[in-house]
Length: 201
Image 1 (tube, one colour):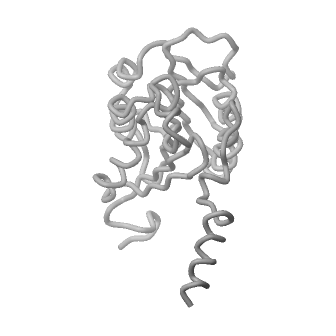
Image 2: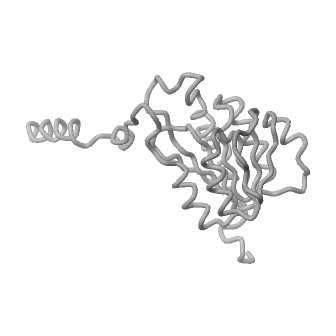
Image 3: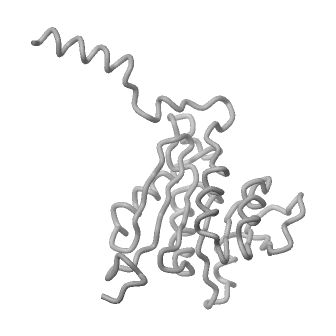
């Protein structure tokens, strides 16, 4: 019995890898987060989409096509034309939220700006004030594959933000982190008193 158990342990060690080890990235990002978010957006059909940190714009342009209107925020000047249904705020995310009309609401928000835990958590807490019930916030870079990607120039420690939400905000949010490098965390805002928003309790 002991020899069989030992054999199974050896087999598991060499064959049954953890999921994240089955998705080792090449030098560039392997997981196509844009396709995944696009699939989600095709079901959400956002009335108003917000993206914090847009890099080359590939993700923003794709999701904007599925949205009634969209807003982009970045500290860098754009080097591409934004879609006609979009607006762009050049500056820091703190400035954006400080100047945002309190009546504005979003149903899908993608956070991919400053990857530090301190700022990504601040971005999340600012963003959730403008999120509808049952709305989604998606955080990027929350499951780096190894120590190298914890460098501030890569994923940094934004994975701690996903952990903080799970540990401290579960009364108001459901969350799930996908273990595909560099990681996506999907967060849904819930109404604490209801499971079905359309049903009178």
